[in-house]
Image (tube, rainbow, N blue to C red):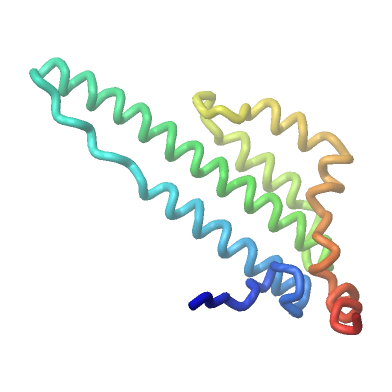
Length: 148
C-alpha cells in the first residue's frame, strides 16, 4: 500500500500563506541542522595509549569543526528566514547587519569562508536574492493555483 503525506506548508499546492510557508520551512530546516549536530561518532579504541590520545585529539578537532559548521548552517538559514520576512512585509532591512554579526563569529576552520560571506553581504544582488520567496508561496499564486 502506498500512502502519501499531505504537502508541507512550504510545498507547491499547500494552500497556506507566504508567512506560514516561510515559518514552516525555517522550522523544518533548523530541525535538520539540529539533528545533523547530534551525529558525532565515538572515537574508536586504539591499540596503545599514544594511539588513543591521537584519535581523541583528532576527534575533538573534528567535533569542534562540525559544531562550527552546524552553527554556520543555522546562521545561513536564519539569514534566509529574516530576509524572507522582508518579502512578506514583516521584516526589516536590519537582517543584513544581524547576519554580519553572526558571520563575524565564524571560526577560520570552517569550509565556508567568513570573509567571503561578509563580502557577499555587501552585494545588492545577493541581498535582493535573499529577500525573494518562491512564487508558489505568495497568496496570489495560491489563489491562481486553486482556480486552475
